[in-house]
Image 1: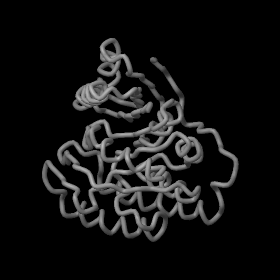
Image 2: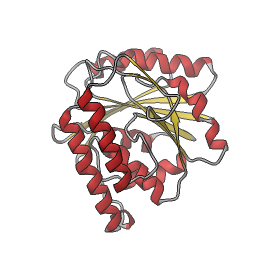
Image 3: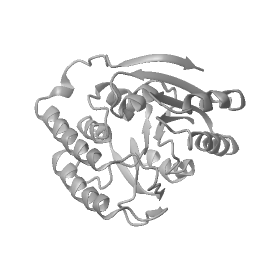
Image 4: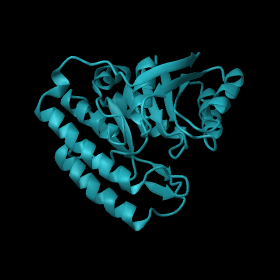
Amino acid sequence: MYLSVVIPARNEETNIKNTIESVYSYLSKKGIEHEIIVVENNSKDSTVQIVKSLIPTTPTLKFIHLKIKGTKPAKGYAVREGMLRAQGQYRLFMDADNATTIDHIEKMMPYFEKGYDIVIASIALRGATVAGGSEPFWRRLFGKMGNLFIQIMAVPGIFDTQRGFKLFTAKAVEDIFPKLTIYGWGFDIEVLALARKFGYKIKEVPINWKNDIVNSKVTLGAYFQVLKETVKVRWNLITRRYSKPVVAVSKITVEEIVY
């Protein structure tokens, strides 16, 4: 097995070192052939310098520095770039804050042998746990209402579309990610909607999630952005947008690649 771990990072100087080191340590001890790809986009802190400093002591670490036009969060851009440059038979993207730890792949990988193509983390299923404090009431409320809307509009039967820990076969990645049109907070929904459209089987599994309330980048505005982007996904499906030729992403400039 060859595993690619893609970590999008924007202003993650407080988290990125620990996350890279924990991923590398776990996979190395397990003897899993792998690559770790950190994709940085428009950080204003020392994220770039920290990642570069780890390259000499982390042989499997690769670094992609993106320059993205505009100031809005563009996690989807970074994930897309990393997943399509990855070489792994299986490709995971995970959040830079290590909210879902790498050892969760142990409970996810067996589902590929059962015929699934994509396995995603969820805190909405029985057996999931949340550490670090409860979400604010408004976030829980908007989360539940938002998921109901997302299920109706785009991905029925998936109860948590937004956890940043999703594992794919290489074929699923290569079919889905070139078709992305959304790069904000709603990109996960488009990924899953495309997976359904292309006939890929998705398995949702409960995980242990560490909630970082203080440093969370998810604002109230982000919830409305997700709903708006969900409507766009629905419209794209209705108008057969995803059946049209892939258009190059003009907003991304790859500033630097360190392998």
